[in-house]
Image 1: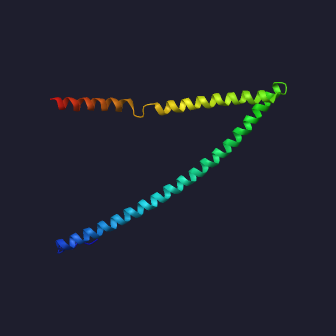
Image 2: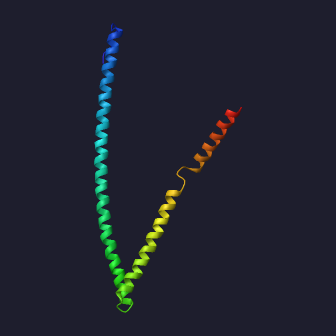
Length: 131
């Protein structure tokens, strides 16, 4: 862009305003494009997660039926024993996973060094107020 040495203040301010408008328009357009790309990627990922969940559910049902039938055959054809044993085993597994999840949510979220640093800062601020 050529620079005019005879340009006045009003002309420079007008150019600055025009450049600012163009920059803001470009930034908004870039944000729209990035948002569209992010949403498309998230939608593809969500569809894959739903499909994986469906396949895993069908697979786990089939595995449960196989395990219950196998235990029932070992128990001299008493299929109800296989169903009860399989149900109890899956219930225990589910409870164990649930407890681990609850424990993970209860764990501190910040790093220990960060927490110590915040305590030091709080003590410093409270000491500064006293003096």
